[in-house]
Structure formats: structure tokens, C-alpha cells
Amino acid sequence: MNSLNFPIFNASGVWCSSERELVDLVKSQSDEVVFKTMTVKPRLGNPEPRLFIGRDFSVNSMGLPNLGVDKYCQIAEKILKYKKPMTASIAGFSENEFISLTKKVDKAPFTSIELNFSCPNLESKGIFAYDISLSLRLLAKLRKLTKKKLGVKLPPYVQRGDIKTMAEGLLKHNINFVTLINSFPLGCVIDHKKEIMVIKPNDGIGGLGGSIIKPIALSQVVLFRKYLGGKREIIGVGGINSAEDIYEFILAGTRGVGIGTALLKKGPKIFKKLKLDLHRLLIKKKIRNISDKLGKLKFL
Ligand code: RRO
Image (tube, rainbow, N blue to C red):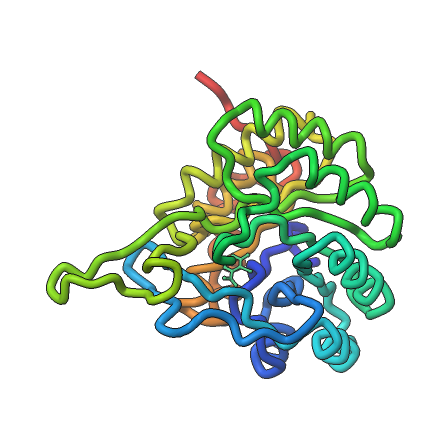
């Protein structure tokens, strides 16, 4: 943990797929290392072009390219010497795969496990977390398989009722944290000069990230905080570019933040700048302890 007592790290998927990137990340000022979502077998992912970075956003349809769980467990062993918390993000294509992944990462030196129930880019597979009862049943099973910190990464919901149902379900299980949010599932960019989509897979439509999704991410944090009653940790992800953005997520109630699109654009040096800027902002606001402001958003 940093001197701010507020962890700032990468969002899964960004700068964390290859061994080289993971080493960069562990050597950077990122407070934790979240691995690319891993599957049972290695995957090449979707055909390229599959990522487009615009000014205020990114759109991706990567399709879960990753080295596979066994390789990531080996990499975790290698970078353990840096003594940084490491999170394994996992995604199975069936209940049995989720079980096998959980058992494998439980034995490796990861500090936490994040269940990715929200990948937007698997053609023909829906987003798992939109089936709330199925997701909660699987969570309950996986919880029994590990004593590690266990969390779930969710997509944005568009109805309060869904957030309430999911939050109440999470409270029944001993889930430690909730990561909000994954990319907004359906976004696209059209190049009007060439009259064509900018990415190839899935009709050119993929997950949207970057500052344009910050208002969506904040609303999810506010409502989950409300329905979880502050009883579970929330990690905020979605359009965080600056210390001011982080401060908004603190007010909304997150105990840490993940950086996605901004890390993609600026690289791991961004962590040093964000921390310095947040430190300065707190001094300017005369705030000694971030926890004094956590969830202290005012309502009109
Ligand atoms: O690999 C991806 O296409 C991907 C994943 Br697993 C995810 O969780 N979120 C995202 O935007 N892309």
C-alpha cells in the first residue's frame, strides 16, 4: 500500500498480458498487479484490428487473448520477489472451468482472485453477470474453494433493481470486493472518411472505455455502495485520468481504483503522476486521511 493508504493500480486487461508487461507493471508505482483475465487454455483472441484508442475513449474487442492459467501462475511465482499484491482475473466458459481455474490460482501466489463475469467480447456468449441468479450460485460455489480474497468484476447495469438484487446477493456470500465496472459492452466507432468501422470483430462493436464512461462507472459505484451498505469493498474502474477523477471515486465510495484506457495511452509512468497529483490535491483540500472522505458524497 502507498503512503496515501489508497491503492491505485491497473485495470485487468491493460498492460498485463505478457510476461514483459507484467514485469513492467510490478516494477512501476502501481500498488498492485492485476493480471489479464486468464482462461484454462491459452487463447489468441479475436482477429485484428481489435483495439482503437480515441481522444476520450477506447473501444476493444480483444476476445480474451491470454497465455492461459498455467503460464500466469508461473509468472506470478517469478514476480513474487517484488512483494506486491497480485490479483488473478479468471474467466471460465463453463462452471467446471471456473472451478478448475479457482483451484489453480488458489495454489499460486496470488493475493486475490477477481472473477470476470463481464467480458463484453465473446461472440455468441452473453455477459454472464446479466444472469444475476446464475452468477450468485456460481459465486457461492467458488467461495467454498478458496480462502483468498475473492471479488467479482461486473458490467454496468441499466436498472437500479438489478444492482439491488446483485448487491443483496453479494451480501449473502462472503465476497470481499466488487470491481465496478468493466467496459460498456456495446460501443463502436465509424471512420466517416473511409466509411468503415475501426475494429473488425463482432460487426465492429466492442467494449467502450475511457473518460466517456466515467459517469456510468460512478453511478454504479454510488448505487452498489448504497445497496451494499458499505459492507463490501468497491474498486472503481472507468475513465480515471486524473487525481480529480480519483477523488470523485473516493467520494462515491471506492477503496481503490484501477486505471484502464489512461494506462493504455500513457504507460505505467502514469501511476507516479496520479499519486503525486492526488497527494497535492489532498494537501490543497486539507485532507489528512482519505478514509475521512470515503463515501462522503453529498446529495442535493
Ligand atoms: O479480452 C477482452 O476482450 C476483454 C475482456 Br476479457 C474484458 O473483461 N473487458 C474488455 O473490455 N475486453
